[in-house]
Image 1 (spheres, rainbow, N blue to C red):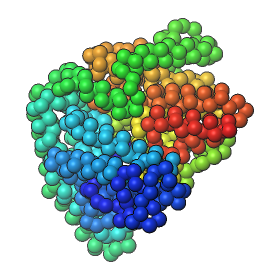
Image 2: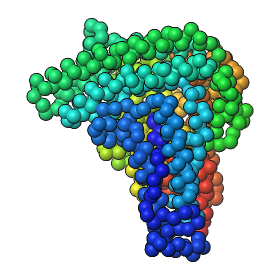
Image 3: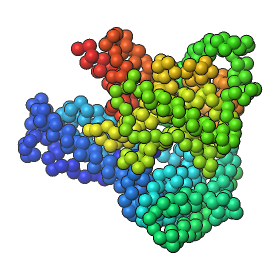
Image 4: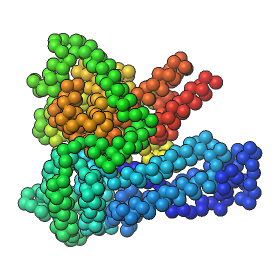
Length: 620
């Protein structure tokens, strides 16, 4: 999920804005001491800072054509462009970020704002500081990897985000194809420079990347056979336009030629670059191998978890949570009458000797999976009033991951709805190999990605009123993924997971997230090899071997990201249980969920403060 940067050029927001410590008065030329600030003046200050936030957000948005598309903005000529991926543009963004921070600090005093506006000030200040601190590490990430990157992001965005309702939109689609060589080429050149700095993924990643890129060069007009995914998508979108057939044919021919003249050479260049980079790749897997790798990983953990937990603390938490979940699994193992050790039960679940835990790896089997996932979400949606006061307006759908990226993409993920309602929220299930998507995990996975998980949290955040856009569309991984994992646990308390195998699947997915704490820190802090991490997950989880291999490969190229889920979930459950203990019968889980969801994503420390304030208010 893309996070929109809010840095922008320095401008004056409202003529009435005054330096920090001198809040705006009803008369723009008159200031008053902070201790005399009235409710009306605070309201005016709130209006001024919210205008500041919106202006900065819009400025940042206007510098990012791709972000505009993700938010459903289809203004020309940006709708036909990609972002500026150059190093020079990153330097400009850094300056915009610094100027925005200085402007805000000079113009506004958080003590003279309402509680909500002061929180926005605090969150913006922390985000801008994080962006500035993170600039040092801008070249430490792996731009191309098997999980994500512009090679797969380009077709994914055109197919899933680029809406075509007019001829102009179709022309913008073609313009984007024609602009691929510059956009993709810039990133390729930068990764070549990073490789010279010692920043490149391990050797195994290059084989996976080459497979993905080769797959993206198959299909008409590049090879014989069915149309390439982009050509098929463009034809489908143009076919729906109210245009003469002759004009539709002209547009399709333009797109076909752009694929040959621009898309194909850009991806062939990428292939050659990856082949050359692979010659210097090593088998070292962790972030520790990078320049100042230990500091980089510490930075990643702090930013992703929004805590000060060390790698050792996270590792040990993972080990203790693994032990607890193993004990709960042994109880389920007994309830289904399995005789043997927990590890033997894992082997039984993993190998599925009777094929009762998987659908056939056929078109019908895959459609059955999607249909059942949607049914589970619909049933849960019908029970939301039991535990929620606020529900999203945006609709959601369930789709299979597209063929061009299903081989290496994650097993499931969520794509946010367009704010204008033009595109629903989407739960993507990766059905490349249904044996890697066991049915006993289907229930928990649907709740996590759909309802009450990511769709509910993200859609509600987008629909909040009176909250600046940077909070609606921003995010904190520990909060977002912590909510997703909490959303797997909550249905257990609501009476779901009646099948003990399905409940085992819920525990298996929680165990998976606990194991992430162990293997992520093992790889990036304790210098485990890829095989050591695979072996640990194989011994301690029931997941299929292909699932395990792919997961470890994911954690290798995304240092720290996988630690957010369990840390965020633990904090949400901990805050809930503390509130229950404090309030007794006055505790209302629906109100608790409103407190968690109705401020949008926040760092865990802020979430704790908000829950504690709610408890204090309830106690009177």
